[in-house]
Amino acid sequence: MEKKYLCLLIGALLLFAGCGGDDQNRENSSGKQAEVRTSRGHAADSGLKEPCELITRAEAGRLIGEDVNDGQYGEQKVVGLKKCFYEAANSDKFLQVTVQQPAFMPRQTLEAGQSPRVIFAETKKMLADGRDDLSGMGDEAFIGTGGLHMLTGDYYITIGVGTPDREGNRQILEAAGRLVLDKLQR
Image: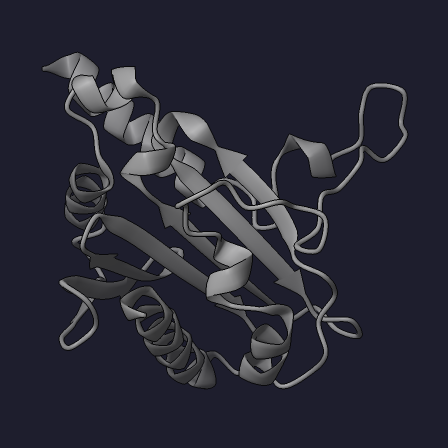
């Protein structure tokens, strides 16, 4: 039982780890910037949902109100997570979308009882304090630490946004969530 909760905790930590991508985006030991894969340079795996397609560069720019750079792609296969981080071209604003999906999870993770649905449920429990549950957005949704969390079918989606207008962030999150849900239903 402890092992199950440890796996869930690790999954949640990976979900909230860094806003700007994975280790490929950090400096390596020689001090040089490591290669960054962008949304243009990543080829989608067959049948998998790609976060940089769920919210495109143009859509991210419209959502936060200014041009954004190419999306920085990252992944954590152990929890079936793919993410895309869009940084504004001329400010500190950003938008990040992640998608966890069983088709991207290792077989042994699934066999151990982990899935996007289980990770969503455990994350929802962990974020009970201060969580704002939403209705009409997928199977379940809430706003809490990390932004908008949505479960729809077998997909666990998070959307994070950073703008100076904290009041406007909720509207951005909900608009981005509706956009993603619409694309998943197609």
